[in-house]
Image (cartoon, rainbow, N blue to C red; front, side):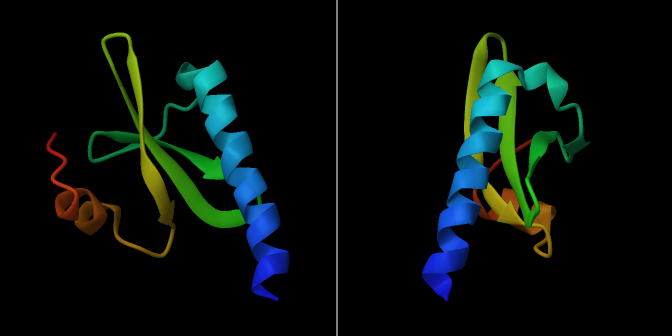
Length: 78
């Protein structure tokens, strides 16, 4: 069963990343200084940052997790 879920989820993550790359300004939602985009029908978000002319993909986060704790565990600062 995991394989059945993993493939569509991975495909949706890839799709979200490609959409962010194509137009990061499309995603203006922000939490604690980090921008994010939803991952299709799955309860995940792709967290990213744009500073100067650099787009950085920071990770994929389940929406039930605390983005504040996630950010602090990874050493991100505002």
